[in-house]
Amino acid sequence: MIAKLNAEHDEIVGSSYALQIAFRDQDVEAARSACKELGGLLHPHTRLEEVGLFAEMKLDELFTEHVASLCAEHAELDVELEAIVAGDLASIPKMLTLLNNHIDREENGLFPAALAYLDDTQWDKLHRPELMDGPGEAHGHPHEQ
Image (tube, rainbow, N blue to C red; front, top):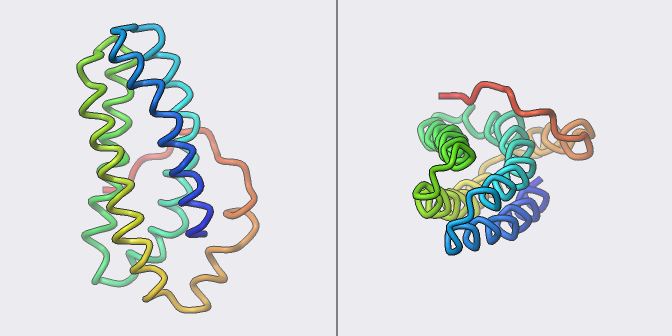
């Protein structure tokens, strides 16, 4: 699960470079296209996190608040993407900073904590085929708060 989420982070970051270029060129159409591509990667990823790893981690009171803040950032990323699609290119730097900081918090905070705290039964739940192999569902789920 952690390897899958890290690999998806790499794809998401790679996809975000098109937004940097659109911002540099002040190209609204390129930004919209980049947001659609980025959203297509981000939405299944955040769903997997929220119904998989985050759901297990928040069972421990030690991580409940941290997981809630990560879910709130997922919702904030959606708001920023929508603003960019609506033509607000000034939102691009904020969205990219949020995205990179969010990924850093996961990869250097929650993911190592998961490796240390989750037990074998929890990992078995996380590695069930519908999470690991299933296609991402269309975005439309409410983010947990």
